[in-house]
Image 1 (tube, rainbow, N blue to C red):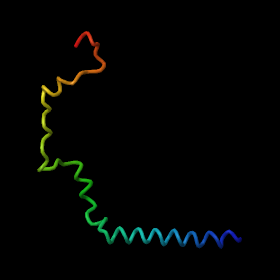
Image 2 (tube, rainbow, N blue to C red):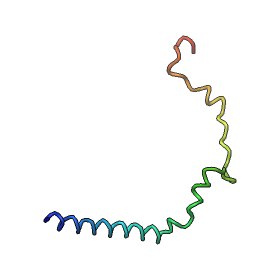
Image 3 (cartoon, rainbow, N blue to C red):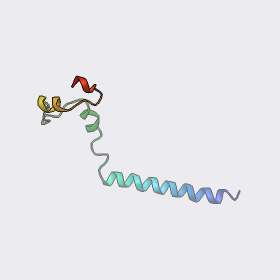
Image 4 (tube, one colour):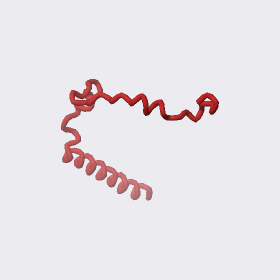
Length: 72
């Protein structure tokens, strides 16, 4: 029975922490636009720059450490 005197304050503390986190999330507008992140994965960004192609000279100049030195 004495355990209940410890468990009830701990449970109340957890509830207060949970409510504090919930109200912080509401105040910081975490729940404003719930669909945006779900749709953002489906569509490409309009202003995204295409990846640049690497220079062939720079790519070819790197030596492959796995190659046999006689083949270089």
